[in-house]
Length: 131
Image 1 (cartoon, rainbow, N blue to C red):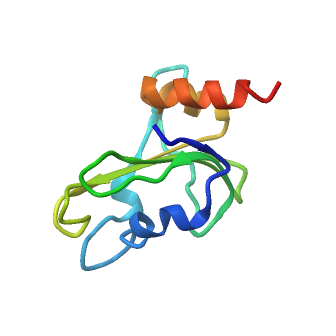
Image 2: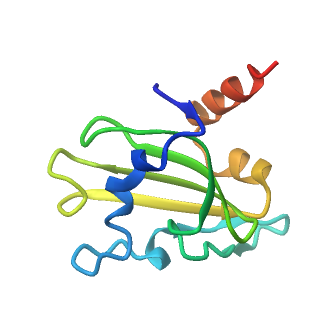
C-alpha cells in the first residue's frame, strides 16, 4: 500500500502541477466533490487556494502512472481538512486522468465520508499504532 504518516510535499508535486493548468483543465471547481450534511444537503466547504494552502500533510501515498491513485489527507490554512485523490494512465494526467478533492470542517467527516475503505483502514492502522 505504501501509505505514510506525514508524507513529503514533493510526493505530490506531479499531480498538483496539473491543477489550474489551463492547457489540461483540472480546475478546483471541477475536481471539488461535495459531502452531504446531516440534512443530506450537499455543501461545498472552502478549499482555499489548494494545493498552495496546505499546512500539514497528514497521511498519504505517492503512486505512479497507471499503477494506483495518489491519496492525500491534509490540513489547510483555513482550518478545513482535505482529502485529495488523483490517478492517471501511463500517458499522464494531460491525456487520461482523474482528480477529486473533498473538503470538510472536521477530520472525522472526511475520513468517514470521502475515503474508500482501503484508505480508511490504512489511515486508522497507522494512526492507532502511535501507542
